[in-house]
Length: 241
Image (cartoon, rainbow, N blue to C red; front, side):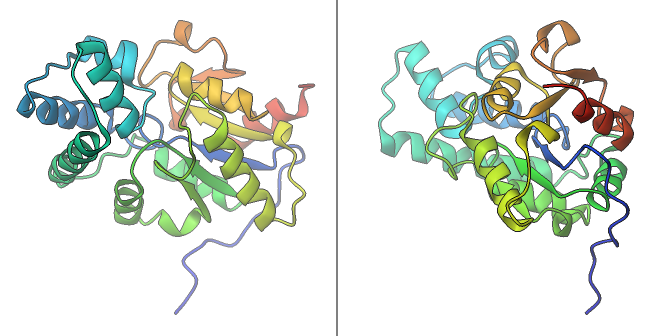
């Protein structure tokens, strides 16, 4: 069977790797996640507004969100109840994803262009089956040798652990020679940018979920992946940290 990965082109001078967040960066799935959370919580007698989701909870993985909402609403959230809600939300999310492609415009092209130049990875709080289903449908899954998903680290973003793990696995797969200051994380939220900064990575913020003013921790802010080039990231990594 032929290899589906495109042949690698010339490596940039400074940029060594790119680690993508998933929801809000590659996939326009945040509205679907919100709907799935709202439907699941409504069945349990809890209200989650759109304003609260984007202001307070978007940076959490599924477990963290249900725990935080329960805490804020004074609802008991033991491990069993949280697991049941996570399972129900995952099932609802699968239903919503069947509606069609959810990739942002330009995302697939940028990922393909990136993967032939540098190693790429995903570091996300989304569930692995959701990530793999969306990337698989877009024929992008084989381009990512490393995917860090919900549950792969003890703590989720804004902890730096997801990005540290993704970087470590990418580095190990490339002879251990990657420098975090020459690797770029691409994020859509301040929680994700905090995670990337804690891992020592350069960062790009995309304004798909929040305005530029709320992405002040990013080294570079753009509208989305369709506005990025490898040359811009290479230039970013060539600057002093």
